[in-house]
Image (cartoon, rainbow, N blue to C red; front, side, top):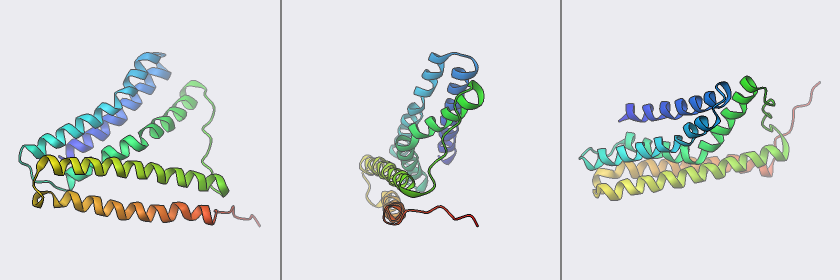
Length: 179
């Protein structure tokens, strides 16, 4: 199963690179857009394969939980990842403007940190829904404790991320003074 998850991650990036290559190197904007639009299909395939694997009698493991985490992260951060790659590809191969660097200090940095946390919250919510769906479909509370454990650990990570991300709102990072 771990190999399948890795394969899905590879497929995600292959679709992005192929879509951007079609768009900027080959001038085939529609083909490029179609390839980029296929990236969510990878998530659907992964979710379906995970459920089929569990329904087929496989014992729920951390690998199945990793699939749920991957899906949540992919949905919540996928658009931003594609945009990030698109900006760099356009700059490198199509004469587009240079990507704007992320804010590293002040209010803009604090705002970016908060936005990142809200995306993390969305990823967590989607991932936990996937985990709950797996538990429901398997219908074996004892056999799915691992999935519940992943949800609990991820909740703790989300809480820590909240504290760090929102700390910049209370105390914005300041630029270092040059001597």
